[in-house]
Amino acid sequence: MARDSLYGEDIVWSGGPKVVSVPGVFKLAAVVAGTMSAVALAFAVVIATGLQQHVGSLVGFSAWSASLALAAVCLPRWFRSSARYAVTEKHVIWQRGRLRRTIERDAISYAIIRWNPSVPGVGDLVLERVVPTGALKRTLSLTLADVEGPDRLWAIVRGLTPSVTLGDGTRPLAQRLDDGERVLWTARPWASRWTARRIATAIGGVLLAMAAAHFLFRLTPPITRVLRAHALPPVTAGVLIGGVALAVLLLAGVACFVGYSALLRPWRLARATRYFVTDRRVLIRRGSEELHLDRERIAYVITAPWREGSARRDVYLVLDGPQARAFSPSGAFGGADEERLVPMFTAVEDADTATAVLHVSRISLTGEAREAA
Image (cartoon, rainbow, N blue to C red; front, side, top):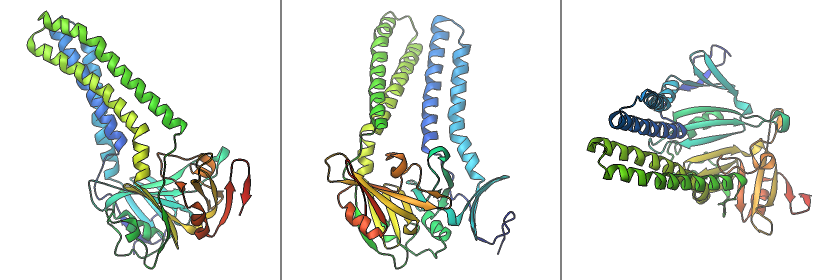
């Protein structure tokens, strides 16, 4: 059996990315930068052929935007392609050349699995560790990107023999449990919260939509006059119309994306979320994302009304780990996060049963009272 060169520990598993994917944020950046490059190039062609003016700055901006779009697609692929992962007796290691990041297996609080919707059986395994809050607030995580069977790899990290049902993200989560594991409680969130961030995002989407409409209405009359006067050759006129259309579509597309993120995405995420408490773990499934948490990591739970006067409650799982208690972005100390999958149950109707089957201390927060159970 091979041994790690730094720690001298036996390597129980090693591998690398099965495929090389590009994160969604980089894809979005590539689309925006590519559209901006096309718009700048279209206006450069119109100014150069119709007005006979120098367009060096516009061409330079177009080339710069095209370079950004190309870099947003190629750099993540290049960076991820040579990454290598290893699981030793005590550590999980991510390595690329001389760059190395590690996390102790015993210090891992929970794992998040993000399945790749376009490549069956492949996904990212994100290992999270609880950290202090307040002045020492930070996040410690290690991402093993594009691994084959991330749930099987998580079982190896936990020191278990993977069951035969693991490795298929399309299979329901309740059918991919450990051998002998059984579900004790399950529920789903019945609402999504309107946070300050969500309200600000919705307002931003409205403002962007108004800017796109204003941009279109202001440019339509002068372009119409230019076309009626036949001041530009047909090809140049077509390039002008195409450039303006791309600029409007870019603004409208960004407005729709921001509006979707604020209005529809939280609602769809809530409908796609399911909570499970088994005799060994707490599991959360949200679309193509999963959270796997061993129950022994839970120190106690905090329950609070989802909103004033509501019978539904939020259940915050306060985690315990080496030199740290609680997890900073989780609800107990950092507020609910609609974007990030964190160890908490939102707006559940049977919170008492969930806390009872966990067999840990409970703090119940009501409007003015705090009771320990």
